[in-house]
Length: 439
Image (cartoon, rainbow, N blue to C red):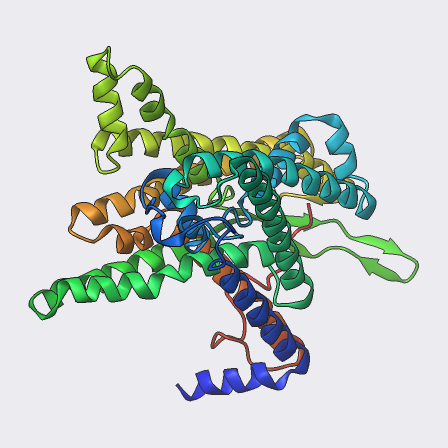
């Protein structure tokens, strides 16, 4: 405990770090306040609670702004959708691949295209949001056309402002601004869910509540292991003599993450899992099979839903890993810089070796990711309430763990630069400060 308070003292003794922490907290407070500002023309007392399905997932990410019909009702989600689209285009379209290789100028153009696409997506999602998520009785403005137009403008402005807040957190704060906004929206639900679960259990089920907390602890630790786990491939660089100096000759590593895809497979799979029930609803009146499919895939606790969900996550993990990690490019960069993997020939043999290792580490990573994704359903089956069960796995927990670890890394780097002892006893987060081969 003494070391913990000493570390906190060291953090606030660094002026730059202290300023960045206060800036981050200030920006996050502004974001949280905006989630409670209701759109003009809406009676908040008549809003329905969309706590299930895709609406419940979005409301979790936005910290309640979705259900509140606030000016941040769409939050940063349109920007994330635009970023995913641009990222996929970068993998497939030569024009975007060229921009990616142009350095800072190319990145600026990609950012501009992403922002324009964000506005387009916000208008599209905003129209669907106003039509499907806000009940007609909650709209008190008589002129519906004016309400729709003004709400679309305000929602778009809110999304742009959230995007600006994320960029300010990245530049003036600790970093990871966009992820920080999502994380604070998710974690804002945790105290209320924990308190509600404790009240529901009461003294009669205090032991069961204690077991829930123990299970949650081990689930979080497992997700930390999944997020941090890497397979290091050693790379040896040949020595080069230039004049009287010798360059190279050192051994570095290529860190292949067990979960290179992050939370993207869960997001993709979860988006598609709503389609069967949606399509079946159109044929429910004329087909018993459609009724069965609709009822099965609307029940998040059914084994059919969870099995399909898990298989899709495994497939999307391999797909997203394949488009985000390019063994051929890694092998070419190593060969160009005079590096080689001991015992493996440079060129195509190195590419095949990296691809084989990547496939082997992705398989257990994808299976583990699928288990984490379906853990909330198993928690609900075990008697945990729906609001508290979402913290036992899924996208919410992966985002929280990933952002918190990255934030700790940022703070760690500031402490080590000032020669202070880091957040961990060893002075560094494991795996953060090792030699890494630049691909």
